[in-house]
Image 1 (cartoon, rainbow, N blue to C red):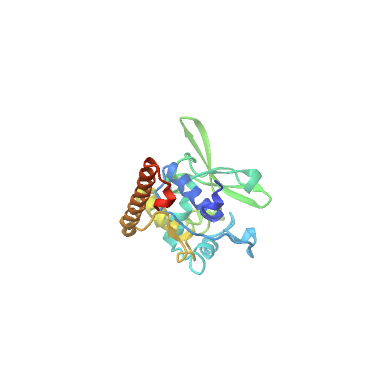
Image 2 (cartoon, rainbow, N blue to C red):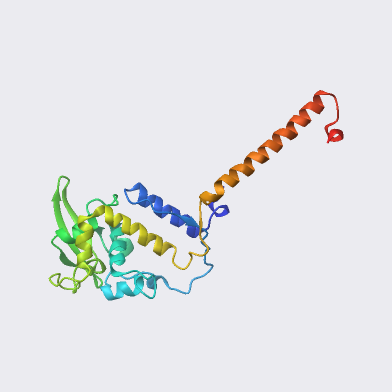
Length: 246
């Protein structure tokens, strides 16, 4: 059965995302369905998310009040999703992964921001990123942070990390409290994925109050079906036409 007969494309990607987060060690995120797919978009692709060179003011303009409505703490929690995956030069112009466990949903992103010694690297074509080198059991490992990541830690993410940003307190907090970060991330994910759609979304399962009623109806229908079958069986056994009996 094609998924479009069950849910919209938007619902499909939402389900895929929360399953991927869960299967990689992330929190269980509640899902509600009923999103409608847009037939066109007036927003060009570069305007959907902050670019890699965004400072915190720019990041806040996308995720904060007036758009998604995230608080500064929620923005920090949300960007922790960079703990998954890697950047590829041929796609984004950047390289490496954000922490040493790119396939595990943990708070390694925040620990990297706090712990590692970052060096600003010029990748060419006016593209920059911060890089750190680690030496572990598997040898030398390179990790990255975008300017839009380091703005959570520094007031001057283009040049130096010496002046700490107000959001640095949340970075340190989540680096030390993984369980709390996962809970906060789940809440902000729901806030993002249901923005402007809450009134049309429904739970996958019926409301618990209605379940006994549904079970009762099913039992009644089953009893009627059994009764009809019994009548037909008796009339056939007696050599009568079932339609005449009914």
